[in-house]
Length: 403
Image: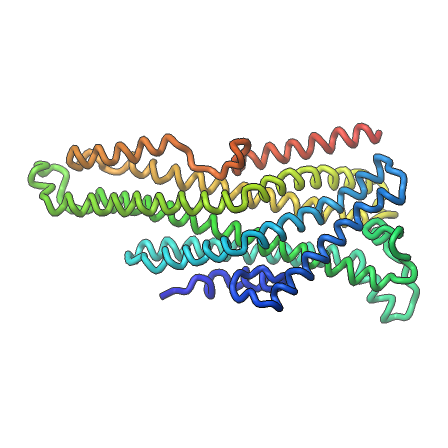
């Protein structure tokens, strides 16, 4: 027996354990860890917005503050989303294990394993990107400070620090390393949450694609249940035993297809509000940071720290929107493949009453299965292109106003 959690979700488990969101063994110590992590994220996000209390709210200040604050809001949405749905996260894992345990056909097991491997490849690729982006962000503040400490020289405090923590609350000069530690912990918690939570979401939906593919396989297997040639008379080709076999295979196919739909819709219902908010916040965040990149490009020699920060945040937003919409497209494509399979198999060699059963499958295919948020948007590559276009439009408006 293959234990999916140990073999396919070990990296996801590590990331969620770090921030206390792994659904198993929720002890008092873990609850304290959750409260501590959420406290860091919430307080740092609030500190970003309090700059409006102590400073005059100009358009330039609003854009600079929100370009980073929206990233923290994204982190907070993801954290509280998984915190509130921690039992759902556990249930979805158990359902995957239950489905895997019920599979007996070697080809079906191979299909499920293939999609598990695909989910793990996604995980490894995104973790590599996360490490790269964390290194880039860390180089803005950590490396200069370390070099200054080792070489015993005065290092100019990164200007980006003054933007990230308003001086209204604490002096930058007197508490530089305390602020640096506080900021890095908050960013680490938020980044780990976004990666760990996003990877769980992607992995669940990738496995759902595997369920749709197993349903397609079962439909093909149902029609090919008999090995007899087509040119033999139908009455001879299909005896009662063959008909029972075909009916059973079609029932199994429909059963798996319903499981895949139910599993996908459970993920959607559990994370619908948080994903919808994330998409809105990320589009705004991407627009503001594209604007920051454009403004700081002209002064790259003087403000490289700001440029790197805006570039890193914009890349995070772009990659998240792409991956989440890509897996939504995969769900639609795999659901459609089920009905393409029912349409393209040799249904005409089956008895008439079995053909009628296949017709019901084809009629169900007229209803698209998609990750639809409130009847407004559906995750797909088309939506990704629309969101990217909207971000570029907002950026263009802001940049034209600045000129």
